[in-house]
Length: 128
Image 1 (cartoon, rainbow, N blue to C red):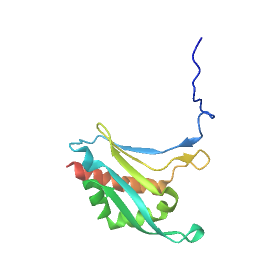
Image 2: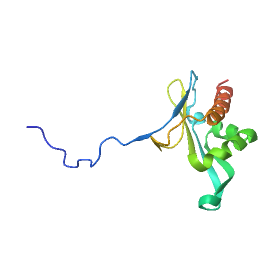
Image 3: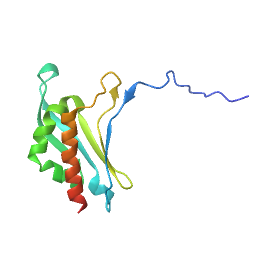
Image 4: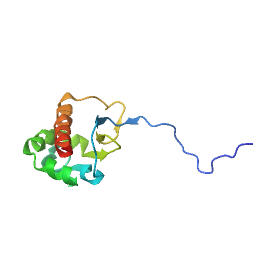
């Protein structure tokens, strides 16, 4: 007879998803240079909340992204909803992703895709 799990989960698969953008191929010599996290500095509460600045945390990539003022302005409209953007190196690619979203809120945004394209260009510049 099979043993029963002593700590069973009270739920099955949850309806939450993430959209991952993969930039490949990338020759990653120093993985810590390619790690970055974007967080919004906000002011106000609830309906009056607005993004006043974007903060990048991480290695050399984070420094390059923080110096791109046009990217900062492109990101501001998305950061109230997204809250955080993460960039992680993998074997021969770099992935860009945001927070988990419920399936009814999951949608592709062409404007956010332009933001990711700009981040990808910065990643490719870092590679050379």
